[in-house]
Length: 631
Image (cartoon, rainbow, N blue to C red; front, side, top):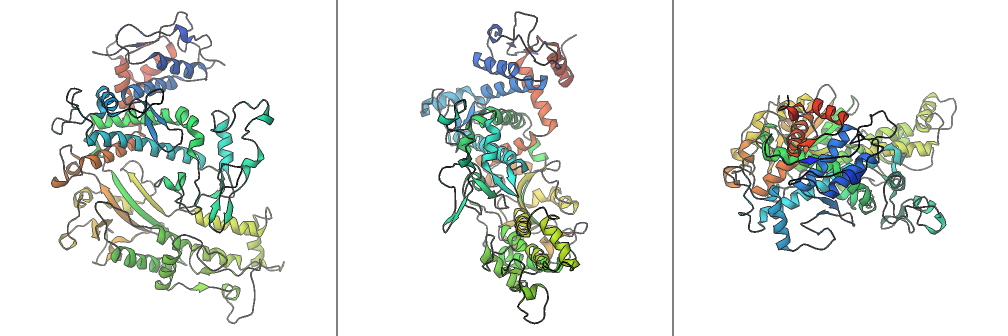
């Protein structure tokens, strides 16, 4: 190994780094950070770095892999930069570029000085693929600024995704409703929650997160839902399909059915910066390795970005589903607005998904979003609207019967809500009615709660079901929910060839795998025998009786992603190209193949000197190439 920077942990006693066995109650019992030193010469890590690593080892029952992760996190901070979520929770700070260590703004001269010291922000020579030198980097180019923004946006997206996935757990829900105070209290056990006192010894004089007022639920008003005065948490919000990691504003903003943020990110800044950011930095390090050393791999992964809907059917509603889907295709794809290539917006499959759910409020209006669009689809697809209990129980004449709750419910037959209400209509007070008794058991969970609560739970189950996705994926990850009837064509090489960055004129377009309509690409059904649009793009999986429509937003190829590719040569523009490369690279970072290779690459640069047998054994077993020059 040559030209390696040296990092050494030198301890004066035999109880050096991790000498205690992993089975001990307390690992590193005598570790003294004052006895941790850096070897002579240029060091990768600062004293603050070593303090961080010391605390990671000293304050928890860590393992050898934790030591590795701590080292790599500090390496990432020095190599890529130290990122933090800002105090407002609405953006990422790159320390040294956006703010100084003491929180002051950095001017353009300071930003340029930072960039000069961090090669990964330099522009690359499009021929050699090598970074331009510090001397060649004389100004903050638009691509440098965009690169910083791309990395910060990638970090922010993954922060929101990770904390949302943690919060979206049954541990913090009651009957499908999420209570933010439950999540906040769980994180309070190990982190500071903004605005609350950590020390509760004298709770009467403290801002106490366990105060009952913070459990107050959302209030419904004429203008929508509101967080009640006295609390700062979103309590009792339904995590329905309008809330998705594909659109961060549905989680931390108001772009959801309720119109209230699910999570207030500013409350969790301490938790995010200490517990989530290190993992993201390590993944970013892997992404950077792929970007720098295996760039052409990004094209060979056959990465795709798709927007799709999957409508599952039964034998009783399959024909109705097809009529609804056919009408959606006709109205929103065949005759919809042409896509703007400069501001591409995917097809809004939620209109179809919400219509398939068909959840109605008791006033006779669709409770779901897109009610106007849904009503039009129902009419065109000849769905029958049921407005009385008599109709629900198939009485030929008006007998004046009513639902057991006395409410006049509305629904369309063959929708998911329609099937639910047909069962609810069977409930009555006749103890000898076996059909009613079966439904009593279903709606009350065998007497565990009231039928009213059961109806609410079952309705919410419909609302939270998500039939749509807009995601990146490769042949090995991301698309496990899709059947082979979809993926076999999706990953055909010709898909990447036929989906030009700038679509051709439709009259000139021909493909066995893709359909071009109104500036959008759709996956073509493999056994299509006609030129009919619906027949071409509605894919029915025979094994599951599920219908799919797949819009292809991106299908990577070497032609599109080459460093010297331009929009004139059929490639992406430089900024879009890098955004895609880093997005896909970050996705690949979750796999062991790239993780192990990247970690080995960076660990070699650290040239660690070991003072602990267990960590040495772990490293030698996991990364044998680190020791290939030893006897």
